Image 1: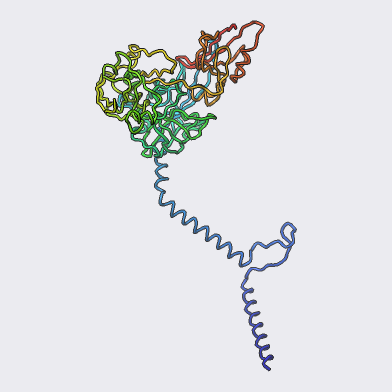
Image 2 (image 1 turned 180 degrees about the horizontal axis):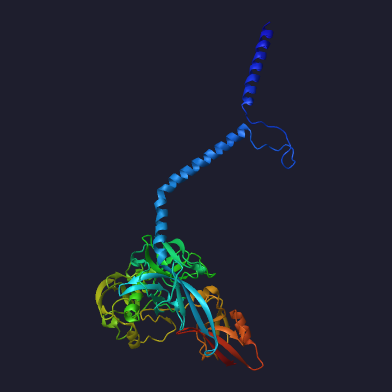
Length: 524
């Protein structure tokens, strides 16, 4: 009896469960059925998923929403920094210009010539020495006699400069504009720039006008031996992307102030590898004001030779805690330094109230010191700090009056320091010439046109039959009208006997007004 009653109640239960299930299905809950899919595949799923699939999708969307909500909350914490980058770019970009220089290279010294274009960047600024507006850029962007320069503004308009001043020793050029209704960038203080601070590099890399890249100040006081023609070197180093075409553009701090003029890069392939160099704006501004006021740059000089190698052990031996200042190796006779009491072995710790970091820093500080004005100099001598008064002389006169001794070290014509020659890698030798292949990166470092090819002369043996016509840094462009693309090719052609017993040598050489082509007949 009990079993029958239990069976009865189980039947009623199953009946009620069926009613509930039928009610739920009747409300339109999704079903699963076997059917032919749109492409004839059996068992394809319908457009709607089962109830458990729909719940999973809703859960995933909810998780995504929560992640993005959290991301938005976190972004709000530094949105002002993002906004600051935008404002810096917005404030400075209208003053950044694109420069196109049409240059002419003489091929045979007289009748034949080749015309080509080089591009660069610049920034519109004001000067305390003259009203109006000027474009500050690099000398190598606009150098060359007969170079035609056109300036393209941020809004697409173009201008021709009213006048151009240039200083190759600092690689700075100033272009005078004939209007005063354009936005000018603010100039900052490069002496106060801290390593690690954010900066923006602006310009036209590869002709891409008005580009902006971001980085930090990686180091200060950098010097590049390859830039032998640039005597005032105290570069700011940055990892902000600087590429061909950025030359002359501004390096800007997060206050929207120009702290440097982008100049060069260290690169194996010719493009950005995270090591760029910028001329400090304090130096560039001084060069600009000198050019505008006097038409040339009057530099100061002491008449000393400085030791390029100044190591930690040297400083300890001198009684200093670390290498600081500039170490004098020789004082030239009857020079401003000699008259002021400086001696061989002195370490210049400060000059005119400015603490000296190294020899390149001293070069710039002395260069910018007014000629004929006494300056206070703190020196370290015999483990004691002394104070002297030295009246800076004019560089040109100091060099003439104080000739340097003849030795085998490279001479820095700044009149303040000499540096040892730096050997080139992968050299080839022929007829007393040391040659290296002119690569794009080597051309870039030597301020040569990016597309120039050939074999660069590194050194010339005085006994070479070519010593009378070849100079270091000449480029062998062709031999017997055959274009040269490598040092090895030049060696092969110059080593080969010819029927005439002579060669026609084409040399590209930097002159006062740009690259000039010279042709010589050479007999072995």
